[in-house]
Image (cartoon, rainbow, N blue to C red; front, side, top):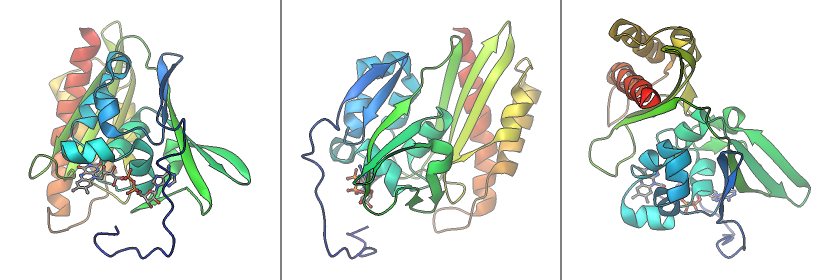
Length: 249
Ligand SMILES: Cc1cc2nc3c(=O)[nH]c(=O)nc-3n(C[C@H](O)[C@H](O)[C@H](O)COP(=O)(O)OP(=O)(O)OC[C@H]3O[C@@H](n4cnc5c(N)ncnc54)[C@H](O)[C@@H]3O)c2cc1C
């Protein structure tokens, strides 16, 4: 934002040296991840890879190695770029964002955190300190699919799917999307379509169409809104199939 001359802050506060904000701590099968944790630290965390492998898949798509070495998990969430990977995954994982200010602290559900383009629920005088990601139920598989023009670019569209199976049928499903609206979005009707059903090609196709209907893309220099909506369908099909396969493995 500074580089593009889109923001002109009078004061810049470097929070890099605040101790204790770059920890990845296991908690109840999930994690508490400090706001200053670098993308690369998540990408290379064996513990995160074991419990929440979808995080590693998404991390690997965040910019280039140099970006991942410097950029932070919390910074990406507060920046709230709708085409960024972390908002999509944190929304699917039903994460909770913790903030602190001189007045105290707040916890904000991911679904309430992303307000609009480049706008999060963080207020003046407040910083994000950590993000809590709950563990996933047994027999939950994941899929993360993204299309971008060149490796390292922001997503033209991205979809994250989490599918929990029980006796060959879908017990629970979560689908979130990026690059196709003012914020990362969930696709509740597409999720509902999956619940209680056995995965078939026809069902997955309809789920993709429903997710496309839930998207709210716009035209820009990278892609038209119609193309993005079409992509949501394609990526959702792939992500849901991958998630269901991993849930059975
Ligand atoms: C060339 C390039 C390519 C990129 N490609 C991608 C990509 O493909 N996908 C992707 O997701 N991202 C991408 N990024 C963004 C990158 O992932 C950064 O992580 C992101 O910009 C945030 O950077 P940062 O952590 O240094 O935060 P900053 O840039 O320092 O901060 C971003 C905003 O958040 C605020 N902020 C930061 N931390 C906190 C906090 N703890 N509490 C409150 N407010 C805070 C800052 O005040 C600022 O408004 C790219 C960046 C570049 C430069």
